[in-house]
Image 1 (tube, rainbow, N blue to C red):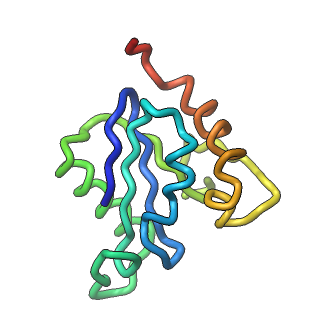
Image 2 (cartoon, rainbow, N blue to C red):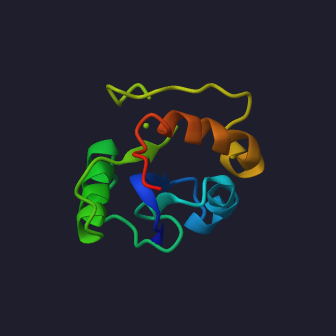
Length: 125
């Protein structure tokens, strides 16, 4: 797990592409410096231990909830995923690439993410 402390609603990213959470360093570097970012490896990827049983999104949501409570984050969070049909209030942004675009095109996608989050970020300056 990595946490970059900032202001406003935290941005949470679950790394589940078979690589460690450090693969998202380029994206975090292109996000606004005051954005709180929480990254963690889902069970069985990167530095996380495997799950004793196969799991789906409900289990992943429970793991994320426990992690956020342990960090003292009890309010709303924005979850960056690829998680739109399964989220009732999700916003879907289509781009021409695939999963790895968050790495290879971080400079292009970070402003899209920040623009979406802009409506929820309180002014704290």
